[in-house]
Image (tube, rainbow, N blue to C red; front, top):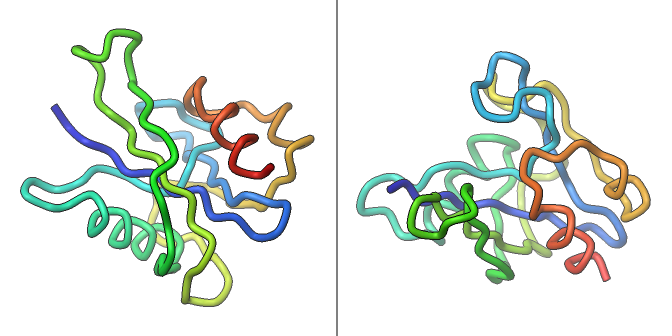
Length: 131
């Protein structure tokens, strides 16, 4: 079973999200958290830092895990998504790197409430993280 790490970058009252490219198999065109799969033998913290650098050029400095969601309703069947809030980072402004995403944006709660998100459980975790 794969393990996934996801970052909610928080800047004031906004959270960073990335839109999945249309060619992606899972949730194409939907808004997602920055992150991805932990490699075999890789710790979750190390995977989080690596994925953030690869996807948006930001290096998390201070972060804490706030939730674990599962891809399927059954925890035994679904891959765990380990979600972290990141409030300090280096790297300047976020930019899209690679071909996994088509755009990025910083969103307030009102906007998050109407976005089409890649995973149903994201909305609640995002809103709690911004309050």
